[in-house]
Length: 261
Image (cartoon, rainbow, N blue to C red; front, side):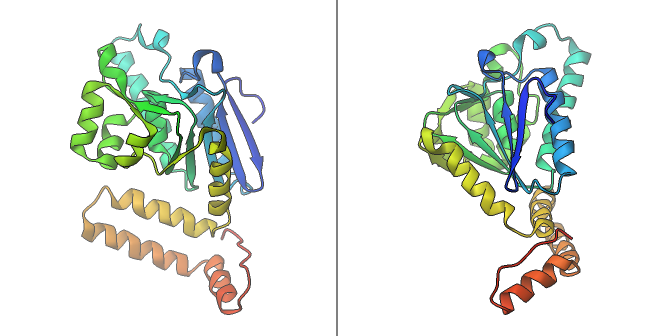
């Protein structure tokens, strides 16, 4: 994973960090960058060492300040649909990774950057962050899942406010409406994200995957159907080595040693 041009990927102590590394263009989300992200996610799924992931941007100004407008400006109807569908597929892969992903929003998270953050499982924001979906100001709409994930996260009315006005909101307002989980002083953001990621990485990997799957799938169904999903996954968890280890460790008053199976 050292051959990427637009992102940096590091793994340390069970935590993988993906850093978008195009600071001169505020880490704009180009097609090449999306492709590299998709490849990195494939590699991290297969890497048992990486049990939690932090995503952030290089520099002090931006997480990801939107898509590469030079690429979008030349799109026609068919190309535009294809670009949107590919971006959606990468965001779907991120959300369905089976390992917890934390967005450490260290600056502007606009357009595609906001959409990427929405596909992460938890979002921590610097107190200097600005978040928004300003596509309306370019004559288009969010195309990488923003209209769908934002409405599911903060509700229809708040989502339409942000999408239809295109306004940027502060980290404090983002937390107030439930868009981010925590607001952190700027200089402490990455250390807090790392701390949270280490906590998540210390949990039972298979159970973690099932937790994410239960919530993600259940939100797309009725409560009755969601409860069936939960019960089925609970049953599968009871058949794992980690379940035996976790309950044995609890009863034996010791720290569990997870095998991930």
